[in-house]
Image 1 (cartoon, one colour):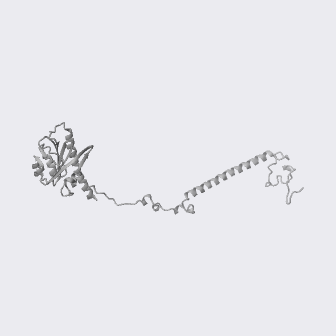
Image 2 (tube, rainbow, N blue to C red):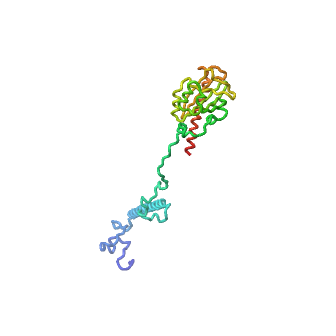
Length: 302
């Protein structure tokens, strides 16, 4: 029986040894199901094993192909994210297409630069009240002691009479007139405050320089007192009775207080209200002189 043209044909009903090309053509294909014993039935175990090998190889190829595809997708996504803010062709540009480091703007490029400057030091208020050349603001009793009353803490003092004189000696007593004259006192301002039967007169002596005022402070003694100023509802006080006095200076000003009872009683160490009144008015005088310097320093700095 013949199954084709041009050569011997394989007969499925014959064993391998009986085929026309057996041991004649080494190129002839060997059938996978041909048994070693030359039997007519196919070798089903060999066929199953060959099929399993082919299936295993196919699965491996599919897994490898899927992994390669996944890597490709991941790379594409990464490139898309990196170039999301750039042009569509940015991902295809070579590294040399990026700007050089020197060409990339830095964070400091937008920060303006200024030439180094130094602010002038603030003006010292005391400089303006230490010399008559700088201390040129208006000066009068009502400038230093404005209003009609004074509150210090919870204590309210009523303002009484005021006085202003270029004759410093006439407003003082005992050893103070000579001291003021010797040191060049040019003006003497006074004001009186009273509260609950106690009165205090504040006297402010004006000099051309701080050195003069400081010397007056250092040379006064217990007899160097300002003469009390009465009137405007304040009776005469501290003319014959014992009173309490203080002396101090700030800038070109020396300031004094004399405090006592308006009924003529003597002040003793137990007269705490008199001491408090004198201290309050001495503190107020200092503050007003200092504020005078602050106001002039502020005006000069504008």
